[in-house]
Amino acid sequence: MGRHADEQRRRGIAAWPIVTGLAVVIIGGLLISYFTFLENDAAPTDASCTSARTVEVVAGPEAAKVVTDVATVYNTTNAQARGACLSVNVTELDSAAAATALAGGWGQSTPAPAVWVPDSAGAIADLTAARPTMTAGMTPDPLATSPVVLAMDEADSKALSTPLTWSALTAPGLRLGLADPQSDPASFFALQSVLAKSGTDTKALTAANLTAGRAQLAEVAAMAVATSGVRSALSALTDGTADFSAVPVAERDLNIFNTDNGDALSAVYPVGAAVGYSITAVGLSAPWVDNTVQDGASAFISFLAKDEALLMFQQAGFRVAGLTPAPAAHGVDPSTAVTQYPGAGSAVASEMATILASLPMAEPSPDPQSEGTTEPTSTDAAASTEATEAIDPSPTSEPGESAATTTSAEVGTAPVTPPGPVITFVVDASAGMSSIE
Image: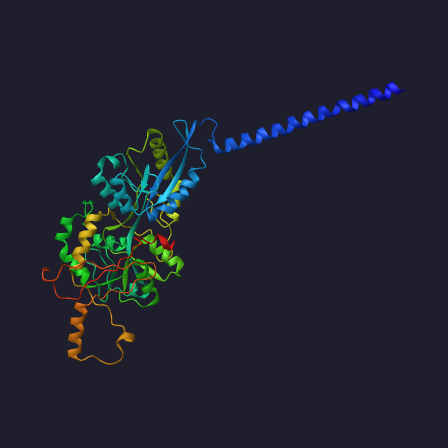
């Protein structure tokens, strides 16, 4: 009886080490599984990948949001190149600034790109002129476009007696609000459209075209008022405080503005070829792009050209060749036929700004609140004219817009200029309208 009880006690004591050992094994297995999960989570997601690489993309302000959205989708596809799992990272940078940086070997704080998606054909032309091998493999056809139009109050647009044309942009009572073409893409697009040739010549404007078209530019300047940029000009048209009746703006940007402002303005499409935004994906040939990243860049560019990605551009207000045009909405009609010409580069923009600054422009309407109710005498009017020509009449910058004036020649050395008021451009440093999205 006692022996039997002792045997039971021995069996009970011997079970504890077994239970403890099993617990250690189970806990250890869980820990190993946990750390293995963490390691795999940081490693390439596909078991066949031997490494992970990032395809850096730089996009212009008008294109950046859509390209980022497309990249987000692309990063879910587990794309690979040469055994490496790929991901795409998009950085926004002004297209002209990007062209300058790339031509100089990059030198930016962000990683150098393998893919560049500028919103301007002129920026590509600038880079190609400086580094032709860097863009040698690109496909010239744009992914999406947005031509320049004229934004007008609906009543003013309906009051036009005859259709406008870019080559002869005149109509009774029409006054354009123009900004510095070096800083305001829409004004630059419009002035290029005035000089664009019809027919088979589809090359971008050159400095020689500007010289030959000086008389046309003078006609436009005579009916134009200097503005600080497209955003403030559209707002002035909307609230009725503008000294002008029409503002050049990209079709897409007017769509965005009207969406946020109750469809206040209407797009007028002058007859003739027009310049505008042109979104093109460029695979770069550069020292920092190795074979693996180059293959990844080509794969992402191909993905951008798929219908699913192109539809995302259209939904953002762009025109896409091959897709059914979006229906008319928010004051614009993308089904309106427009022949879009490639934009010129920075050298043409600089020369155009210089020519425009030398041409007389329409004087802004007087502000009754600032002038009082006393009618000026002829003597006062003469004095006022002299003062206007001697004093910088720069308008006040809008919030978020930096003011700058064109540099004039030194006193005593400047040539005699045509009569008229001094023209001062106030620069809209945003270089686009993407900030209102």
